[in-house]
Amino acid sequence: MYTERVMDHFMNPRNMGEIPDADGVGTVGNPVCGDLMTVYIKVKDNRLKDVKFKTFGCGAAIATSSMITELAKGKTLEEGLKITRVDVADNLGGLPPVKMHCSNLAADALHSAIEDFKKKELKK
Ligand code: FES
Image (tube, rainbow, N blue to C red; front, side, top):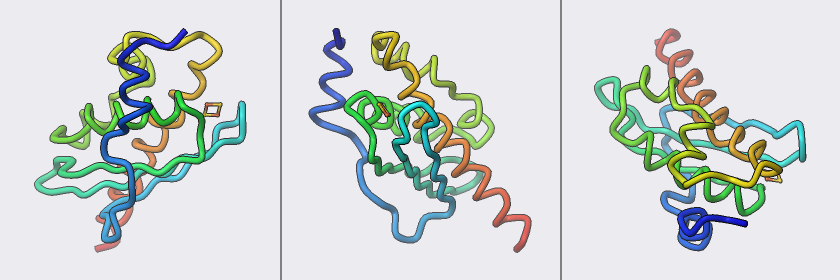
């Protein structure tokens, strides 16, 4: 039911953990299952220099977060905001339909972390 890529990112998640001095942090909850996700970003010259995540989500949430950190690193903030849950699922070779809602967490938390960074910049 899961692709090999999903299993790989679930078993060996990339960039899992926290960035203590993050420039932006986004935490979102999944309305479907109640699970939580936090994404931390470091920004340099308008680019996502580092991206990490922590989740209280299922295996699909772990795999999609792991994938989104890889997709987002090195991208500009504008490009990061354009990464959708469909991009994440496509790069994992697809997700079972009942698990598509899990990929919302990763994309929403990344977008929220970028918005958090922008808000903090405005206050500077
Ligand atoms: Fe909640 Fe997957 S079941 S994130």
